[in-house]
Length: 271
Image (cartoon, rainbow, N blue to C red; front, side, top):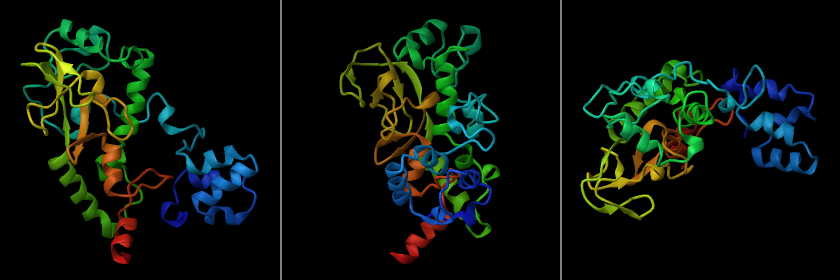
């Protein structure tokens, strides 16, 4: 059911005030009933307004905006990660990119890396690839999952649970991959095809050193998208973006896009 009182600032409120809403009780309908109604009466716009995550200002999906996060500078900085030996020392913008993969020390290696991923996903400045990266940052690393500062709907009694979840995730699951030359011939974990000695390979430190991926294969198991800036979570020995890692452990509100500790508590109490 749509439990709206807990999400009073959600964009769903504006949607429910739309003249498209045929009857007041609609806001208490479950999503399946709403979907069936909209399909039968050709009201897909209504379904989009209520169910999909929308911008409060223009009603466009939030992740289609060029800039959703207020800070799209360094993923490492946003996650609070310290610099290490794999941190990129290259000025990506001087090479015409918005980001450079960590671990590569020459511009030639950076170009070689980007030649190995789909052209439309290469983050060249002012390109489709730059917009793709911005969108993926907003989608895969929702800021409300990263810090309490960006959460509006975590009740005081559940804040310690939120902090525990974030701390455990950061310690156990969350990390940033890096790129290096494959030291010997092996198989890509993603596609199982060969990686030859000297090929550029992505390494995920929370996995075994022998596990490597082609740059095009370092993807989230759930959404199959490239892991933005090589940021990943590990769960059951599989790669996930932070969004889908969190959703395997906590339910997410369809309106405000925050994971819910209240619902998780109720399920535990009931079952």
